[in-house]
Image 1 (tube, rainbow, N blue to C red):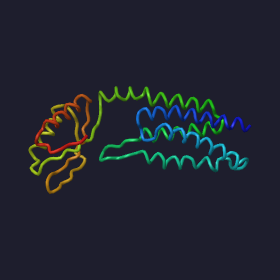
Image 2: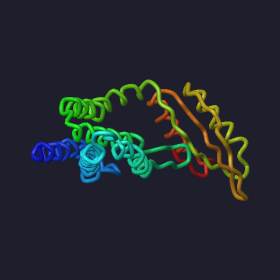
Image 3: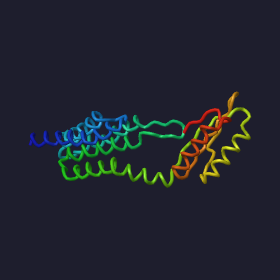
Image 4: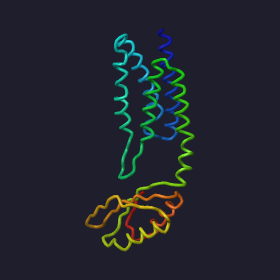
Length: 210
């Protein structure tokens, strides 16, 4: 029996390492060691939960794994203005924990299938996402204008429409030296790139970020 439990932990290490390698290869916040440890830890907590809680309450520890993983996942999500990063890595942490729990419970086929699905989503689906982005993408542009902003702002918005892009002003912030507009611009990826090139060459824009 003890050997089987050790085998579950070993599988949790290997399965977590596979997903962790993919995250490390892409230089994500939660990489090889982090994902592997999450998988092993989830498996061990599940095993311990069944041992301590048997027969009346075998899930008393395992049920709290999800809460703990939520805190870890929140630590890799970053927001900068209208741009949010780290959501995929947070979801990967969640999947690694679920996979570890399945292994800790001896559900080898379920865990193996989950691993396969996770690798497919993280690798192959990225190409599908890139293909979708060529047809439609949305970006948030932070554009700083000088104090006399009305004419260049009109020119920028005219250029957006000429490129057949849709836009919406999310908010604006005024300071003593300039005014900043946050534009949500959507359309084909190639046209968004042309709009970025336009901003680079437009001298009446003080600065911009996308």
